[in-house]
Image (cartoon, rainbow, N blue to C red; front, side, top):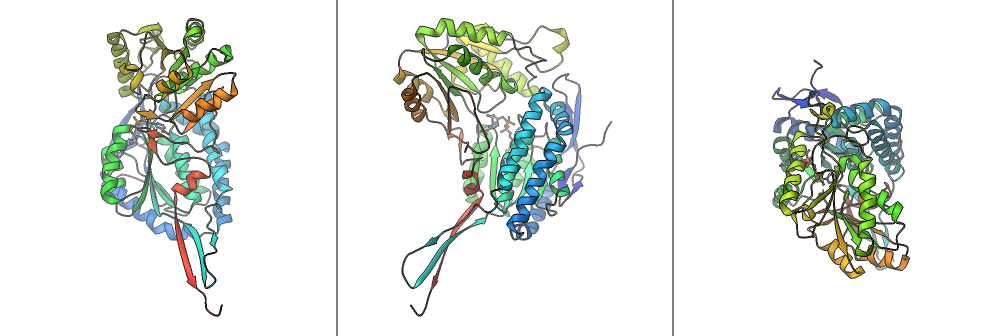
Length: 476
Ligand code: NAD
């Protein structure tokens, strides 16, 4: 048996203060997975102090040098792609090609923000002749980065790259089931020139390590990606501490398909929208709103494309046993609510997959927007199809949700596309595609999907303060 995964603190691998570990599970086989150290509040304190100690030096490292280090991390992620992707797929069960795409995306975060180290800029304000007034952007200090298990390395990079670019130092906590690639990222950071303490990782349970990060008085911001209930819990602690947060939470996003759309392409995009990463994507398109006149034809196309996706091949398992149980519970709820499973609705019968956490890609019809399966995030490869008559009704249905993360519109009428896109209450809307996401596009939610923004130049504003400085001038 291999040694347990250790924390990464102050530039080196460190065992837990408490010495306890957690045995992992391989989601593809149900067999043993990676064993991971379980941290305590003492480990968090050690890591936060290391990050605090490194903060001044990192902030005052010349911006070109900081940029060079971030660019070197990006190149290393690509150089180590095979090894990192194998690690990610072993922890999550996702197809290797998907892990590779996610790690290339992680490299892009570092590449993009490497070029923006000088961008959190201020300006000179012309107020009156005897005053020299300017603003500057300064880092916040130690940033806590808490991430979920669905895109482990990619989501760690999404927050860590802009936080480091803006001059902050980091204490990251990955999900306990998928910790390996975040530790690898911190190790690569150290090897490529980050000073000791600039990027620390503490492993362990959310209730212990995550909470200790949010509560630590030297942590000056938390970037949290995860579920709504945990986001709310963090928000309550943050309220007492007046701690700034970025909350990237769940979604129940709508793809709206009008009768005049390119239906063949829309169907393939609609299927990609709810089956990528076996539906374990916050921006999944899990409500498919279809204009009534094409409902039958379009449903048939979606069902046909879904049938081609085989669990264990194109579609990986649920990443945790808990998530597998959740999705199966929603299959029962769907049946109780009277929805019709056009395809799927259970676990695959293939005996080779029996021990893994697999579910069938599933399309439900006979659904109304007030059913639980239309309102609650399932986080599996499950879509509900809901018909609509008019543009207004489609927008009202899309917005009748507690969530507001992303949305999609498929139509050949570009005026309508823009009208609808601008009416959807969500942080990103895609026209005639699903999830054309890129590092340059700000990303984040409305309503229960969270607040703050990751990605783009915008994210840098969430990892820095603006300060105004005025100086009285004499002799004028
Ligand atoms: P989760 O909220 O259970 O866990 C997320 C992280 O928080 C984990 O590292 C966990 O250990 C930690 N945590 C748990 N309890 C904590 C506490 N009390 N204090 C501090 N940290 C704590 O979420 P999950 O089940 O791992 O992930 C799935 C959820 O993440 C889904 O709702 C999904 O939509 C959401 N998500 C959102 C985005 C986004 O960008 N908006 C991206 C990916 C996933």
